[in-house]
Amino acid sequence: MSNSLKGQFVKVPAVKINELVNNVVNVDPKKAMNELLEDPKLVKTLKKLSLV
Image (cartoon, rainbow, N blue to C red):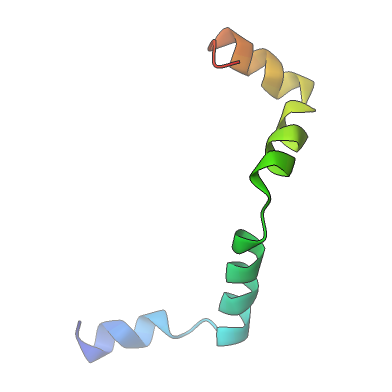
């Protein structure tokens, strides 16, 4: 990768990247699914698509 390209990717502060990574890693899939399935609109849509 050329240096000019590398420069474009380093504009975001490292702290912010770490925060994002931590948020992504700490997601509990079961909890996320339960939260999603509490949304009646989403459940209706999923039933229409026969995914549930």
